Length: 559
Image 1 (cartoon, rainbow, N blue to C red):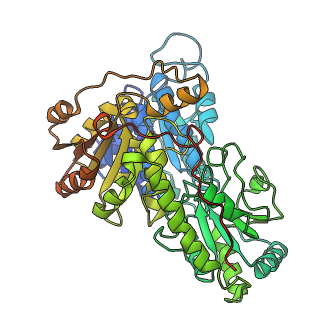
Image 2: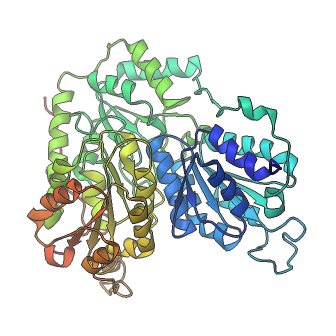
């Protein structure tokens, strides 16, 4: 006699209908029925992380690199709580992540009876960390809850959503919903702007003589019309999360050199008569808590109405999808702009000056971005942690060409980058992934190195090792008179660790050898580790605001 169709079978089949090919998580007592159903179906790859925190970042990284929904399974109570950091980061990034967790059997849950993994108000914890959270109270509701949760995750602004399913409900027989045969992922049409707002936008832009774009992650699908504006003479910068919307080797794209702490660019902003801020929050993290001097005349375009003037004042706001608004703008302008004839040439020179000045501020690390870019495939995924090397050359100078290759902790949490990179490496396609992480961040995610090994991923892990928290040292130098305390870490010998994991290993002790080491590591099939021995290469100079602003002679407008 065949086994009955259960809620767990429904969940497995629903995920298949969602076009899921990879999910991340930890098997545990309160999710075994669901994962057993997924295993029996054998249509979805299950990636066994070493901890729920790592798994949650992997699901997020997968979503960012693939453009699909990331899927995470955890256990109940402590297991679900372990995933909170990853859900918070996914919310920062507006990543669609579906988190499915178990729950104590219905008759015991949240009664303080001491059952395994039972905690008070698990759903409340998940709701606070993510966009929304649901509990399956009975088997008949599960299909509707699944559909609602996916709709929440994929609607703008996208984000992480949790469903908790008690173990008794996971095992409950349920009629197979007829709607499964016709279910497809919800399609939310992009938000069209109002005619009046676009009319006002066109009037402002048509008169601008020295216009610029600032693109954020909300503009990641607007690359084509954005490039058309650059071709019409606009300059451009991006938020750190908006990198690659237009390839950063375009001469009119400054990329993430967006001004904060760089007097060369801030001086140039004084000459800009209009900046279009598209799909960006103009975050305090990138503007030194909104003290960076942006152009005085800002226009905002955003699908989120709450973005209107939230951080910097504007002279107008267009509520709509970034791509649709910019396409409409390009069409109405028809190539007719008032951009000054010399603006393009000035901007190209600005880009060269700003990049050169930033390189000069990096001491022995000034050539690292160019060395790495020369050996990385153009489509390689660039995943990194919040470490001093990423906060300088990794996030500002290493050029990116596609937004799906730009993977980093937007919430600035340490230790997340490697797991984000693991998830990105598992996205569809044949792309190498390069992960940059400091030794402090690596200590927080070191167990997940074995996930890379077990999954045989095409990942080069670069560990910048200065024996502690380099950024914290610079903050202490500035904030407490150079009293460096609690900043030094005892870490394993990375060569021995690589040997234990069976991974090829390179150590870089001379600045000029970095590119060659990464090139050799990149040529190996499977995972590898490259260590930057920063104690041999030299201490990394502090960056603004812990060091000085990057300065040069004030920009003089050419006549």
